[in-house]
Structures are given as structure tokens and as C-alpha cells.
Image 1: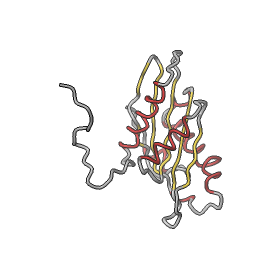
Image 2: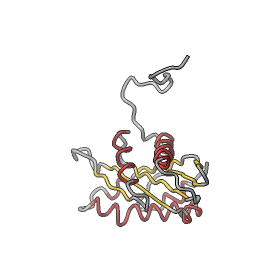
Image 3: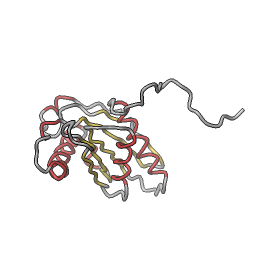
Length: 174
């Protein structure tokens, strides 16, 4: 796992908090790593927030990630999604994403944020292509590192009464 200095991110207009990073996951020479970053509400009053997020906030965030982790510049794919609620009077959160060259990845990350009830977060997943096509296994890798980053950042909300220590339900083999 790579740790990022919070000081580099405090100067960013797009980010107000240090990102939570997943461990790297390697499958057939491809490497995956995700970062979950709390969205700073300084831009909440922007009149066109969703286009502003895509054109200014997220690119600035990616610049900061590249500065803190130079190896992210060499990633083959940088896919991301965000889910923000400018204020509590907004009935539904604003969402957006980019595939980063991995067709359908942005929408999958958006869905992951929705299912996890995550708000005010930007999720970035990097993939370094290793030369072997992974097929549908790449979706498992992307989801796995994304969930890990969201969990480490405390963005995944659990329904009341749910305890993370319980054994998973389902078929058990004897």
C-alpha cells in the first residue's frame, strides 16, 4: 500500500482531505489500485456543478494524485466516478464518471457508489495493463480495489443493525 501525504492535497481546490488508498491488486501482470477522496464542498455553490466537477475539480484531483504518486502518470487507464450532494436540500446526489479508456468502467463505479450509499466522494481506479487480456475478470479487480478504498476511507455506509463481524450467509459446504 502506498501512503499519500495529506499536505499535498490540502492545497488543492478539488480535494480537502487525504485520499484512502487500496492495496495494489495484480492479476496476469495487470495492476489495479483505487483511491477514494472526500469531496470538499467549497465548490458546492457553483451554478453548473456537474460539468464543473468533470472539467475542473476531477482533473485537479488527478494532478494532485500524480504529484503524490508519480507512478499513476504511467497508468494505462484512469477511470473515476463521483457522487456529491451540494446541500441536504438537493433531493438526489449529482453523479458523473469517466471510463478512462476502459469501456463501461465509469458507470460501474457510479453504481458501486450508489449501492454503497456513498456521498461526497470521488473514486479513482488506476490500471496498469500487463499485456494479457483479462476479460470479465477485470471488472472483479476494479470493483475489489474500489470497495477496499471506499471502506478504508469510511465512505461505505452500512444499514443499521448490520455488523461486519457476522459470517456471510449462503450455502455452506461440509
